[in-house]
Length: 89
Image (tube, rainbow, N blue to C red):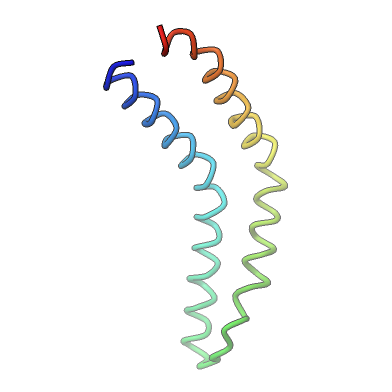
């Protein structure tokens, strides 16, 4: 294995990881920001107020995009296993 091969495998793994986590993290971040702005405007200092809306948004995103995310994960690992002989040889 050459250093370029290791770099390419690592880069592809990181790209898949970002593609799998971004659809969950970005809506959660937006909901948290909106609730934080609401809390700042109304001076409500309840720390648990953001938990339920974030949980609902994450659940909805996983229900909608879950099959796509799972298919991407399976495709990546099938390709990685298929490429093992080329990576070693």
